[in-house]
Image (cartoon, rainbow, N blue to C red; front, side, top):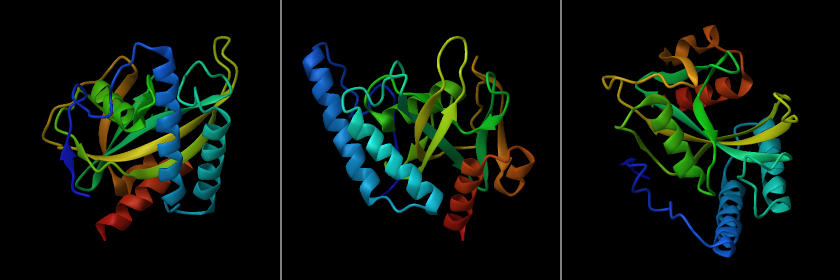
Amino acid sequence: MSDRVHSEFTHPSISPSTDEGDTLQNAVSKGAALIAELETYEPHNSTEQEHIARTIAFIQTHPHNWYDRHNLKGHITASAWIVAEDSVLLTHHRKLNQWFQLGGHCDEPDVVGSAFREATEESGLKRLSYPEILFDVDVHLIPERKGIPAHNHFDIRYRLVGDRSEPFTISHESNDLRWVPLAELEHYTQDASVLRMRDKSLWMMD
């Protein structure tokens, strides 16, 4: 699928609803579509395959609030793996004090739109293009913090293409943003899922 440039204000799948019944039905419908996408997605390894199975099971168990951050059993989150040439844009997360890809919670049951929104809000970048296909799936535990119990993030990741010549803006959620060469990524993080996305990107470049 060819890359396309999007605006967070005109993304076709974002359609706010004022009726609770419609909102719940929309969540069920979008959840079913996400499950279908996950079922046809080819995992990178057995670890990612397990994470896909857990994510599908979670959506099936929570059909109305699988995306809702207030679901303390866990929730689907959205990430943006932003690449440009041989580098990836990482954020030094203020709360976690580690380097990660950009991303965050879904405010509605639109994971693609949420990934794009997080990318633009956390970087200030406007010239982002991406294919609307899954790039990675990861499940990780978020530790208890400020009275919020530990829970799982079922993270859906999309690959976005950026432009290194465009200036970025560091948001209040980050200590720093940096274009990191893929070949030097292990100097910034040992997170297995981030390195997995690095390996996928290198494979795509071959």
